[in-house]
Length: 194
Image (tube, rainbow, N blue to C red; front, side, top):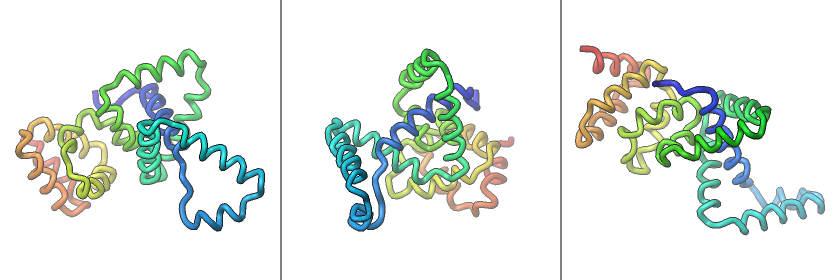
């Protein structure tokens, strides 16, 4: 099944948003921002810093990763995530807990795919084999290419991911990126059609 139910998206959205908002870190000139805070604001910030530093390192790492993922999501996907979070918060607590338990039961690699947002997260279980072993320096270009693909092109890429032996996946990724962005969907369609 290509698309996931809204319940799964809600659970994933909650996980991403909770981690992203908990791991929020100031950017820019932190010294000037601190100086501009009122004493009560500085104290509140100090409590947040202490709470952050009190978290176990694996949890801080997870939240930092979620925050960084949130920052690079396209604005439309951020809005979808915010709407999903609002809908999730409106659910009865028992339903929230049930959805969270289902999300927590996902394979770790699939769950991490939801960090890519609701569009790619929904497709990640079908695409992750193609992108699981991408070196860090190549991830950004691939993510931009994936975000730019329409749904049918992601479906075609998922078919190719399943058909392509592991030793040929690097060549498939390189060939995809070698195509001009405007022609990638057509290129994928031609590769899938007999």
